[in-house]
Length: 393
Ligand SMILES: Cc1ncc(COP(=O)(O)O)c(C=O)c1O
Image (tube, rainbow, N blue to C red; front, side):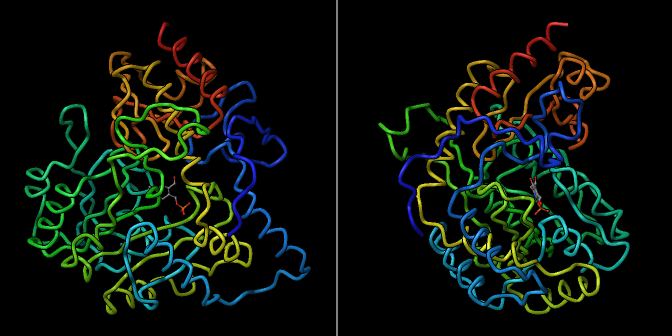
């Protein structure tokens, strides 16, 4: 993949007014939207170029799954995480949310699923969608870090418990679980004979705990102690009972060009997953295939430069918000404590001050709000100005 000759311009403010953007459509025009996990940056030019050359062919018909996509994804998993998977373990589909729902469809009706909260809100609709029972287990805060509460998790297990679903890096808290936590989770999963669903869609957006903002040109790539570990690679005993979910959509900012992949090593589980999709979940379209393959073949400086810019935004957030901000290790989603404000309707309160955030109640934790900082620094500065005004009232 060619490396661009000039650095990406993440400071550039690009109007999305003409694109019917879900992010920018949701609120009135004078409200700055900082909610859904969709960044206000141009997608990398190498992906846009690949899409343009596909469009040069004028027929966008039904398209078979290219074998080269599987190979590209295998190469990407190996390159970033040293995980070598079999070709046959991959099930491709148009999104991670459909994959989460299909994972639940592999269970018998009435089974129980365990969900540590707060969590990305579609997790909280899964049980109802699949006629299952949901058991929410609140995470706890240790030294300001959110982490799984294994005592309460164990206490939540019943004879009907079948599955636990997590996301890592965690949306909305920004945690990136460390090896010790993942090993403890693995013991919990194995001891209770559960299936683990691990949504790792944010796995390339690792910002570390002690990020400093330095101009990119002087410090090309910072070393950061926080790493993402695909849990099924880290703990081989989990492999046969895990569904791991990935997509290029977050780090390359192409969520509207739908594609995702489930890695399922166990053939029986994989077959149940595939059976559940039949007639319901379509395949990926030609543009989704092109964008995903191009992204998974990328070895350029896109990820280091993007994450470096996001680290700068995170540092700015820290300066402005102090310990309201939960320590963030991954994702571009800030989890901010507003408990002292005692807001009855957090979304409306901030909208009233011109800021569109995601209320914590949506994720199962009303004391916080989530703010998307995947945007130019000037946009973030304006968002934080509005945030502070909202707190003054
Ligand atoms: C943890 C997590 N999973 C899944 C998704 C959405 O995935 P998709 O658009 O592929 O359905 C998001 C988007 O914000 C997310 O944060």
